[in-house]
Image (tube, rainbow, N blue to C red; front, side):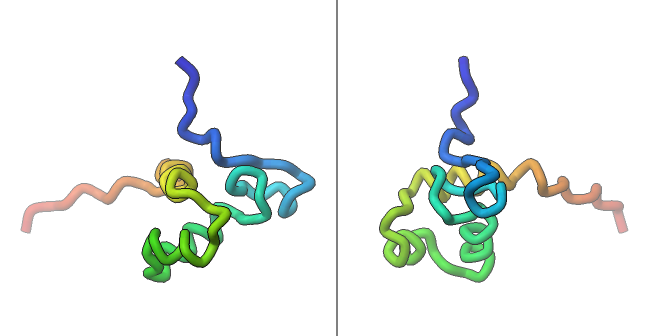
Length: 77
């Protein structure tokens, strides 16, 4: 079975200098993640950027998740 988690994430040297973008749009994954990190809700992002879809937000989060290291193990006090 093909892995389709990142079908919405494209990398094209001719678009945004090859940064990972949403569906070939000039909308980098990093910008979407930055909006979420700043506290914007998915609903407000989708309202402000009507060309984005709910699946784009999920795909961006899934794309970024492996870059986040697991938390260190906690030591007992």
